[in-house]
Amino acid sequence: MALLVPWPLKLVVDNVLQAQPLPDALGDVFGWLAGNRSSLLVVAVAGGALVTFVHNALGVAEKYVNTTLEQRAVLDLRSDLFQHAQGLSLTFHDRRSTGDFMSRIHDQAVAVGKIPLTVPRLAKSVLTLLGMFWVAFRIDAELALLSLTVVPLLYYTTTRYTRSIKPRVHAVKEMEGQSLSMVQESLSMLRVILAFGREEYEHG
Image 1 (cartoon, rainbow, N blue to C red):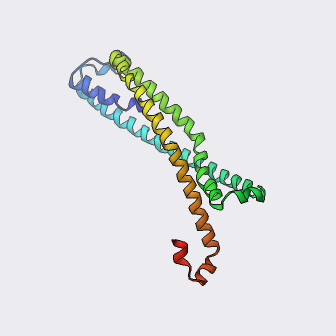
Image 2 (cartoon, rainbow, N blue to C red):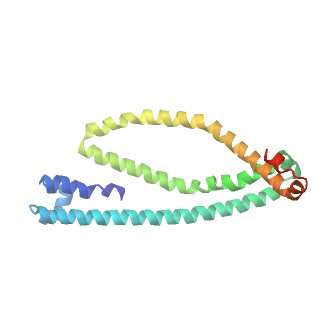
Image 3 (cartoon, rainbow, N blue to C red):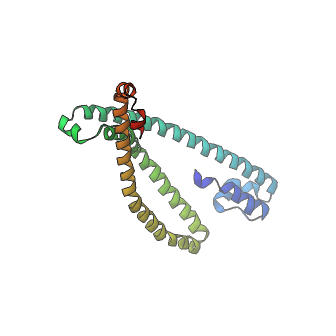
């Protein structure tokens, strides 16, 4: 649907303003508008509005379905992780902090829940790129092939950024787990902390 969005504008620019003949695919359908630029302009504007409306409506429906599936998957996964954590041995719990468990159950469940939704989005993006390249190739083959020269540069920059950011992400997750552990321990002993006036010490 995204590939159809620019076509009404193309009709206005090429076939209405510059009075070029309609493409063969559109000429079979709108051949009766040949030479009547006013009617063609009305059809192009109406078609553009319809395509935009359908495109946005499908986008809203897609987001609603994806959000519903994602939230259900995340809630189910959190429940399963919590149940699994309760079945682990005390020795394993001694080696892991409470904050680390909380971080994994809360945050990583969200990341894992997005995986099934990433495949359709990736397929959609790939198909859209292939369609855009096919349209560009039909218009100007040399320019379309020239546009592919940036692909190696994009791949290199993306790969390098991913490799450099991955250790930092792990470090941030470790710090989040440690901070959650301190918060959990402080809240579990809140009455003792307040009784001895140790709020500033615990905060520091």
